[in-house]
Length: 269
Image 1 (cartoon, rainbow, N blue to C red):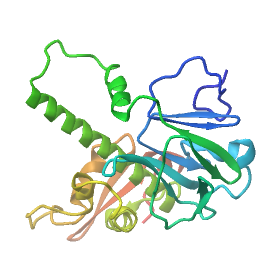
Image 2: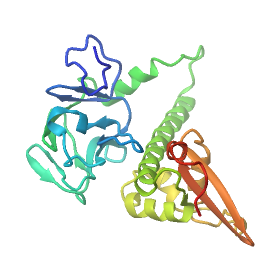
Image 3: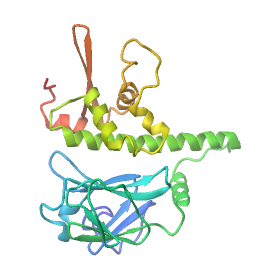
Image 4: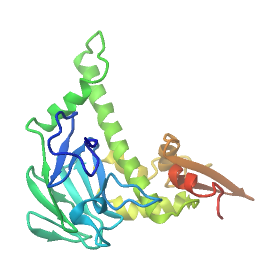
């Protein structure tokens, strides 16, 4: 039997690991265990979470490399679909194209992308209960925290989830604008992120990566991408960083680790 999240996954899987949502088509099942996934067409240089081109009804050039994103909107507290591919998609028999605001997804909504139809399904338990199921898999402390400590822990968990969504968005954008072996300056990356996600990233904690709250006027801390730079450096498993100094001018560059490994590993300036 195929793995649960492979395109050929059986709809009769005997057991299911905790998941936030499920995409259920005629010949596949995809369990959504992340807060943001990309649907589209995988290539040698770009992998998506769900490759629709490998599914029967989704073959052909109508499937964009990055066709749609399904994500949990922390601000509005519901799942939504953002259309990215030029050929759009339909939800509940209503057509949507790029540029539309993200569409709220309800359980049992029928989605069609490039001829492939599937249902978006939420678990019968509430979303918070599903989060609790994930938490139950982690080692439990021997001493229960007091209420104030529990609140602090919830806040930290929320920040980590939001940060993960930001990292996913940055990786998606870099893969769009860079080819293997290419690097992007932090200035350009910050500008592109601001244009694409400035109005859609959910909270002030997330949007802080698109502005600079520092009062310092020295070094790189006065640059608007300073917080973004610090975030990328926290995730060396995803991002390669480099600094180039010419005279008194210092420039920071970023690249996806996967793209660097596919390229020659040298900075092309």
